[in-house]
Length: 259
Image 1 (cartoon, helix red, strand yellow):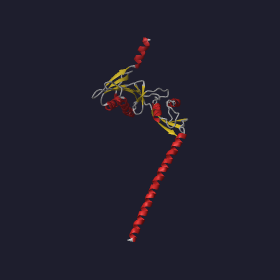
Image 2: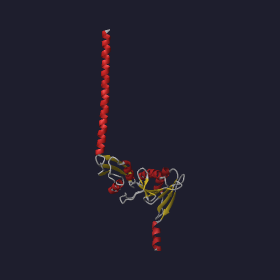
Image 3: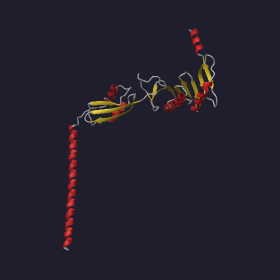
Image 4: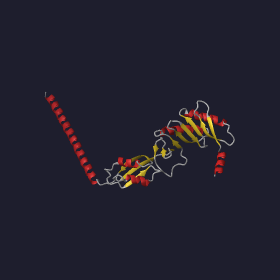
């Protein structure tokens, strides 16, 4: 009996020590968290007046002047490192004409980094707008535009389709030593192409690639009248094509006579 009571006493004693140990650990954690909280609070109070003093523009923008980017950033209140709204900075930078995307982050203790990705112009859209590689339209001016950008035309909302079709037909023509310079999609969704040799191809609404291939196949066999050049090739037929000719020498002579 005594042995049994001794075991019970020792078990209870161990449980008491376990409980005491658990409570002590919990209190230590609470005290530690409290000290950490007050330490962070004191640190924030000490550094509450921290300001952005350095601006770093990354990404090597080609069309946007760095001063334009800095001017956009300075539209935002930079007086407090902690209260600075990086999303507002991002919106201001992305509002610049050539900027496609911008990412913004703060770097302690006083630096703001802005990484800029610009649109890459691949075509001129409807004479006064530009297209990027994704077929997205944007409006911007620059004297650094690549020379001889292709000219694309079409109704609003057809930009991406026009760019995709241009790429497909350009590749098909290039394999056969033709260079596609311009493309137009009419309001009735009929396609026209202009080649660098002055030839215009009327493709109609459907079977664009098939009709371009027909032109490529027939072109070497066309018999040109003396002094004539191909003006328009009408491919809007199930089979065959129609050719319109022009006579540059006669046109020049008429212009001289009129002068």
